[in-house]
Amino acid sequence: MNELVVIAIGGNSIITSNEQQSIQHQEKAIKAIVSNIADMLEGGYNIVLTHGNGPQVGLDLRRAEVASQYEDIPIVPLANCVANTQGGIGYQLQQGLVNELTQRGIDKQVITLITRVEVAGDDINFSNPTKPIGAFFSEQQRDLLMQEHPDWKFVEDSGRGYRRVVASPVPVKVLETDAITSLLERGFVVIALGGGGIPVVQDGDHLYRGVDAVIDKDLATTLLAKELDADILAITTGVEKVCINFGKPNQQALGQITSEETRRYMSEGHFPAGSMLPKIEASLNFLASGGSRVIITTPEKLPQAIKRETGTHIVTV
Image (tube, rainbow, N blue to C red):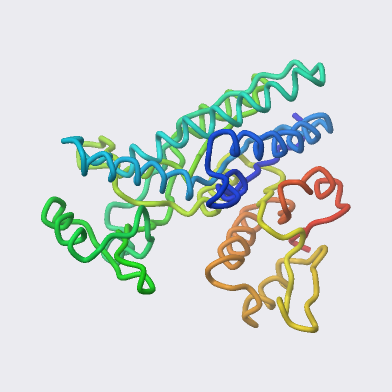
């Protein structure tokens, strides 16, 4: 089998700004993304594509919140919203990639797979939810929602109002890994694990149930890449290369670096906790499990990065 690349696409790569949230705008962004994926397929790589859903799941939640104010329509559980966005974004990516491949005369099957991720019911993050989701609410709206949903937690957000916060538990197991493996063996391009996966916990009877949580996309993608024994993990972001001393006169873009160098830069505080640090931690996790290379770059630079022409490449030695 050719080299397997697991690629993580950010939700902000599909919705690029608040002014470009329509389906038409998303399809335009996706057209550019799938062109780069098609280039890699032409290079002979097998591909699993994961994607974020931050802006999209926020819109889904907002629609449900607005609808509930005017009609007696129940709030949609967060796990269902993640599933909805997996289907919606997956459909857009799948159709866009199939159309791109058809235009190139390539006969390749593409499939979107609804993907669950098991998390531990006693994960410490459930007792300290910190991930903001959905719309901003006034204090009065917050109080009404807390009456309807006593288990919901809210935080005040920079003077803009109150937002609901949920847990971000550590992913334990991707439940559809065997299905993804079977699809890869049959030659499919697989789109999976949207939004970090649908978080589920297992009860005492070994039955699963969805929970209101958000799993970090990069952590979940790394777990999947490890379970698939992928050769390369590609994490896309807003910069062509990772930098140290970012924003300073001595800013330096990184080409190829080792795990040891990466850990040193991390200990020196070069990677901000809210942005690059989770991607770096995920990269080191993947390499420690036997992966050969991690690429961090923008979606449009993936075809060049896979050939080592650009991007940051983290390797074991």
